[in-house]
Image (cartoon, rainbow, N blue to C red; front, side, top):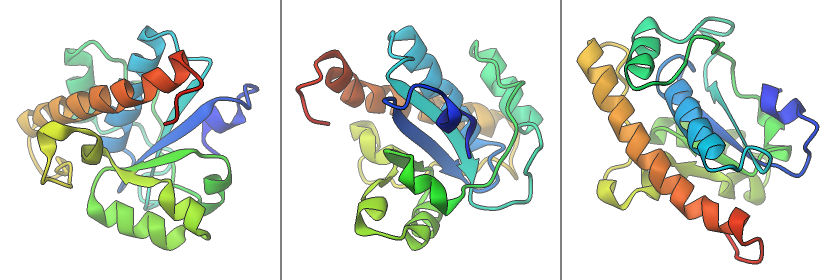
Length: 176
C-alpha cells in the first residue's frame, strides 16, 4: 500500500501518479503535486503518492537524472523509493493519474469496477496547453535535457490539475 494511504487522515483525497517503473515521470509528478498541495495549505486534505505498472525497479531510488532535474528546480527527490501499483489500491484512491496512454490502458484493465476505471485519468488531460497530446514522454533512454523538459511539462500539468482541485477543498460544497 502506498505510504500516504496508511496515513491516519482517512478523509484525505488520495491521488496516485503512475508511470512504467516509478523512477522517472511518476516520482516527478508526485513530488511536484505534493509540493503544490503543501504550499497551498492542503496537506491535510490531499494525499499524493506514485507507483509504476511494472516491478523492475521496486525499492530503488528515483533515476539520478530525475533527482538532479528535481533538485535543479528546488525539489527533493532523494527519499523516493519505487513501488508497483497494486490493483487493490483502487479501493483507497480517489484519482489515479496515468502519465501516458499505455499506463492508462494497464490501469483500466486492472480496475475491477466502472467506478475504478473512472478514477483513471491522463495527466495531460488536465492541462489545456497540451490539448491534443496524451503522453508525457518517457525520458529514461534520453539525456538530462530531456528529463528537464519532461519535468517542465509535468510541472505545468500539475499546476493545472491543482488549480482544478483546489476550489473543491477551499469551498467543499463545490463538486470536483
